[in-house]
Image 1 (cartoon, rainbow, N blue to C red):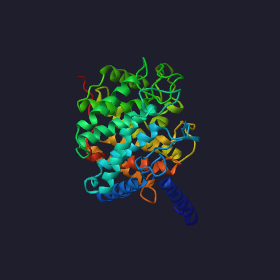
Image 2: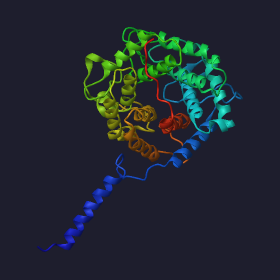
Image 3: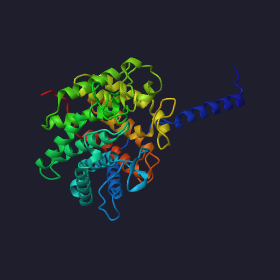
Image 4: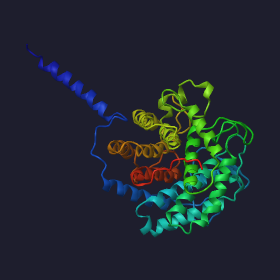
Amino acid sequence: MRIDQRRFLISSQGILAVFLFWLVSPGQLPAADPVSKTALRKAVSKGAELIVGMQESLGPDGAVLNEWPYEGVYRVRSPRSRKGIIPIGYRVGGTAICSIALLKTPAYRSSKAAQAAVRRGRDFIVASLKDPLLSASFKGSYDVRGWGHAYALQFLLEARESGKLGKKRAYDEHIRGLVAALEETEIPRSGGWNYSRRSGALRASPPSTFMTAATLQALFLASASGFKVDPGVIDRALDSLEEARLDSGAFQYSTFPGSKNGRGFEDVPGAVGRMPLCEVTLYLAGRGKAERIRSSLEAFFEHWGELEKRRKKTGTHEPPYMIAPYYFFFAHYYAAQAIEFLPSKLRDSYRQRLYKLLWQIREKDGGWNDRVFPRSKSYGTAMTILSLLQPGLDKPPAWKKK
């Protein structure tokens, strides 16, 4: 049989073009060399350097540079300014996350700049606990103070246990106060927490699954560190997570057990930013399975492109999956955490899958940012550092009733 060489060449070029297009399509990059331990170490070091350099103050001119505010679209009114200002919950939460990241870096013990920055961050957090807008309350229908409570609690517990920031007992009163604030601000009847609630402080309202799961992990750590945590608060929050799980493995954005539809927020691509977190949290409380954690990670990697489409974009929840940009590094941090719950023989391959995605969107200066706001690079870089360090960190503790 004779072959038309010209036709064969054209068809071969077409096949090659399709193949190359597939290779460079988002989320379908060709297999690359593994991210080496040296590259990981340098990335963590450079990221820490950037975070230290981004410490600032939203206080009066000339104030000590002592915070890393997370910046989103939400603002609160201030009597001192006509423009809305970043709420204290975001300021404390962002500072806590950056402080945890620096505290966990291998070079922390030898870096006087990092040590000084974390001490300033700690002092800012502790002083902010006296702010009326960080009290155990909820104002209106949208209030992000709970994020400040949860991550301030996690940081102070980490600082206390590290032995790097003074005596343990110096933190005890603040930790007990934050545990009490979270217990007091749980949503009545349904349990859990949400930064968006029906009008009226602390009225019954659907809990947010991803806020509830993250807050539970902070409370698990408090309990494991010897602090009293109300088991009823934990049980109600865990119940709300279980009630929000769909047969597909997705979790609702907010728990509405009687109105699951599997679309938009509830479709798997719209839920991958919270699935690993929710599954790990339930597993830590004896209500999950390792297979579910792995399935959540497979969904995360399969639909990562939907998260990437929303990174550094304006707006929040956009169709078809209602994904907001603020899911991005939050999702990667908890995916990295989830990987450490897989069988040991699987972890390296899953870690590499995550590292390669993070390397795709690393910025020229060595940082990471998922928002349109330059300020939020500190948060994005901190969450990425914590993602890269996960293999060497302690796993979050399991919940044990006492």
